[in-house]
Length: 343
Image (tube, rainbow, N blue to C red):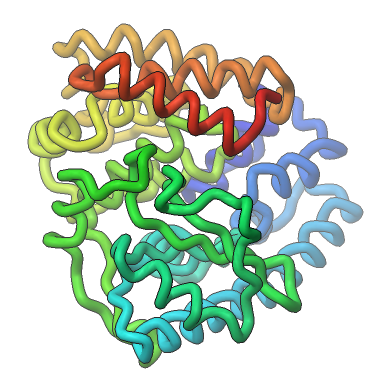
């Protein structure tokens, strides 16, 4: 792994004690933006006293971070507005990622994001679209919908680049509620989000779903990996053996194992965190995870290439739980191609 990636991972996971050797500062700012870790990097570098950081890089990071703070604040307010609109329309909501994840992991470090994620019940999709129409343009008539098999529907803000995604399912490719979705709703926690009633995921299930989300996208954003490293230190995740069992019953062992092994190979599992990797060593999934972790960490620069896209699709296939039938995968792949094109 390149020193620039090591710098970003350690900054994002609050483990930056010194600057890695051999840094190419001309690439640092670009990669920080690409992996959406600019504010975290700037805060961690300031804590080190900025020794060894070129003034030009300091100026760039300072300016970009200030812009991201303003944008994150505005978009968190947009989430509050949307939740209030949906509550008035009688739509039950569950929030995750975006500002919700920032509040759970580290409220002091602004989180870069370009969309808001709100989960609703499938039958409430129509009411939700009407409730958001004041500020958001609905998708076109030919766009994917829950009824056509989409997992989410995207609404574009009328006056900013913000996207609001409505989800009816966390993992299912057919827009249907799965057993995992039922478990997510049943175990979710009621919260008051700045005056708007909503729900958030139970911490262990949120961690596992974030593992799956990052894994199925081949962790092409290092921020996802850094955030999982921060969450591993939380007592709310319980014992490794318990989470391992929960993973097997929900997202699958491979989705759980991959980020743990990637963090281990990147040198970000220390102290008590190492027991997470130890819990996997007696499981056959460990060999699979080690092979993929090495491949992903060695190829984290080629984001957006055909090779990266093909790798991501193949990895997504391998992440299907063993009980998934060939028919389920064929339908998943067909819908994926229809939504994104053949590339």
